[in-house]
Length: 513
Image (cartoon, rainbow, N blue to C red; front, side, top):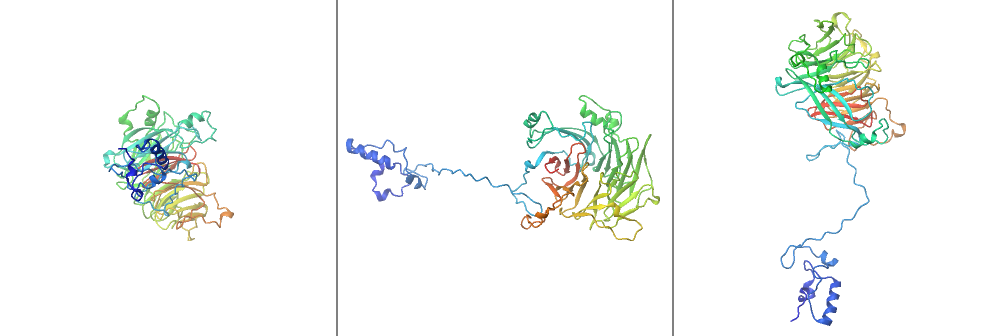
């Protein structure tokens, strides 16, 4: 008895709709010719040849004998259309879903690094180094000093960080500052090197500020480098961190720990009242002046002498609520400004009798004034940031005297982009129209007052649907940190910004500044 193909055992009406036919039309014709000459044989190509109809009819995924059969998928057509562009997240306009996270666009960063810490460092300052000013080459190096907010008082520290191997984030083919650009660019996105030295600190550090060193007087191995800490215990400690910096730079070097771990001086003028406001005067190392303000509205001045530090006993008392921030005038050595939870900004002269302010703005903001920054280049401009999220620029030439009955002056500029309290604000050290700000809405923003909207674009509306207008002066928004507390420019690496938050520190440079 001759053999027949399996499919020929079924009539045509039964074959239609079968899960997977194994014989194509070509195979059928070949089989027919063999039958005419030699009888009937099994099709040798039965398991190798498939027709388009056979493939499309294989819907059940199972053969006649019950065996699973792989489903044949249609070929994927290549599309020449580019993938959709990532959506830009704008705070206050867009809302992240539960399964969404923010991803940084590294094409807008020249450098971007993140640093985790053992304990939150909610206050820090940039240390001046001997590596030169106006540094443009990468990899870069930066020195920071930070104070911790640990779980218990005894676990707190003052930490000096050395961040090296800070590489570029993106390749910049137009950079010709270095003869070894190719070598630099080959090492993009390498991990930075983090080294640190620490000093035990009793109590959390509310604020930390380093003694300002002018460019003409770089860090010396023989002169002290002072840092002041506002402790939650109500004490202000002054430390000499020069041995810690030297130990980071000189391999194998050591220092006298008992001496370095002991404050050079402790200010007890505030008693047990804690505070946050603090600023050093920009004077030489032989004549230092430190202002500290507490939550009971008092401001104390401490000066240095050849034999040590001398706190003055009489406070400055014109504020009626907590002093939030203090800034010495960059041009007048006896003048400083302060802001307070009483919504005012006050101007003081240490030579005035009675320790009262000489001028001020009684209602600078609708709520507490948290931070201020005095422009070091255009010295009549002062920035202020409020608890309502507003940022204002003041012309101090218009500020009224304390005994004047004139109304408060109007700010020369005002911005309401942030939707939570402003936590830090600072002018650019070498560009008098640029400043950085941070807010409790997890944003770090960069601004340029010199930018004005083009007349041709005035009628164009590129605001996201349902969102707020983006001010033309807003250059950049850096996000991704939680509970941002402070932001500072690096004075020796142009355009470099450092911010600290509950989850660590970021150091970055954008294409905008």
